[in-house]
Length: 178
Image (cartoon, rainbow, N blue to C red; front, side, top):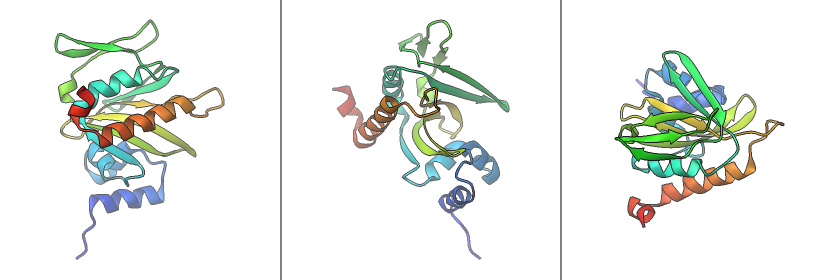
């Protein structure tokens, strides 16, 4: 009897339909979205520990231009297309301080066990996003890089995304604290 690993199953789904969303793969395979993302090929994802959440959120707020923040909840999808707001820690939360029309909210950073930098095709275009996941592998929310009026990714955001991904993947927490 042959058994396939989750990595092999995810690769097979991507080979059949590269645009398939990790959330849909998770439903198909009966696992969490975080497990699917971690099982994606290395050229699709880079996973870093959740202890970097504040660093990531602070950096994304510096990227400018619109990004799309997405929250999946109860079968519904909520999106905000705007610059990602700056935040600060107070009262046990990372508080997003968006201007009118921007995202507001209160994030429990300690619930963010993993962060994925994901680059994959979707509907014929390359997408890049940062996904935040719980210890159980549930998606907390995602931040997709913005596009211009011609639906092209914003070059400065793509560069910042790759730079941050590389920095976090090759750094230790003490490197970032200095």
